[in-house]
Image 1: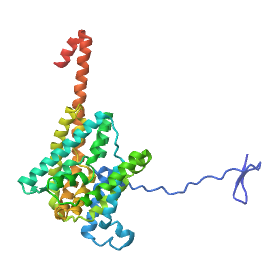
Image 2: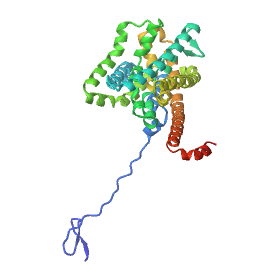
Image 3: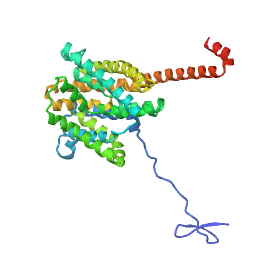
Image 4: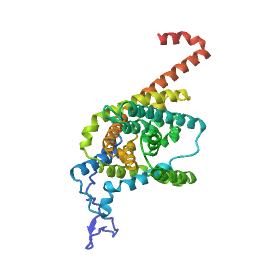
Length: 366
C-alpha cells in the first residue's frame, strides 16, 4: 500500500483512504515557579511571608500603593476591612454542639492556656511596669494565649484521636482580639469603649450564628479562611516599619521558647488530668499565625497601645515561627511516650492472660 499527498495537504493511501494528519505538539512547556510551595515551607508562611512583604513596602516604599482606588485599598488603609472578613470566616467555623468529653477537655485546654498567659501578663504589668526583657504585657498575653489552630488539627489528626481533634472546638474562642480585649479591660489595663468591643466581636457572632444554622455556610466560608489570611497579613505589614524588627526580633525568639515551655507544660498536665493522653496538650503549645494581627487591633481600640503595638506584632510573629518549629517536636515526643506506655500496657495485659510467657517478659525487661 502506497501513501500519497493530496493538493489539500491531506495524506491518503492509493486506495483513497483518508488518514489523520500527523500530530505535531509544538506547544512550549509550561514554566512552573513553585511560589506556593516555597511559602508553605516557611512556618506560618501564609501569614509571615505577606506580613514581611508588607513591612518591606511600608519601610522602603511607603507611598507605593497610596494612589487611591482599589490599589490603595490593598495598603494599610484596607486592613480593618480585611480583618472584618477574616473574623467572620473564623466565626462560621465555631460549632455550638460537640461531644461532652471533647468539650470538657477543650475548655480545660482553653482555660489552661489563656489562664497562664493572663497570670504572666498581669504579673509583668504589676511587678515590672508592663515590660520585662523587652516583652510587653500585650505581646505576652497574645503569644501565650492563642493556639495555632491549623497546626493543632494537623498534629492531633496525625498523632492523636478524634477526641483530641475535637478539643479544638472550644479552643477556637482564643482566635482574634476579643478575648484579649476582655482580659485587658477586666484587669484594668486597657480603656476600650464597649462599642469598640462589640464592633470586634460582631463579625464573629454573625458568622457563628450563620455557620450553625446552615452547614453549607460553615463549609463555604470556613474553607475560605486561608484565602483571606495573606491579604490580612499584607495590609497589616504596611502598618509596621522594619526598624521595629531589630527591636523585637531576638526578644520574639525568646517569647516563642517561653510559649512552648510554659503553655506546653501546663496544657499537657491539664489534658492528662481531664482524661487525655497529653498529645492535645502538647499540640496546643504554639502561637497562632493570625495572632500577629491582634496587637494592632488592640491599639486601634485603645490608642495607649499604639506605641508598643508594632514591636509586639513583630515579637508575636517571631513566636509564631519558633513554635511552628518546636511544637511538632514536642508533640512527637509526647506521642512516642504515649506509644511506649501503650505497648508496655499491652505486654502486661498479655502476661496476665498468658502467665507462662512471664520469663520472656522478664528477659525483655532486663
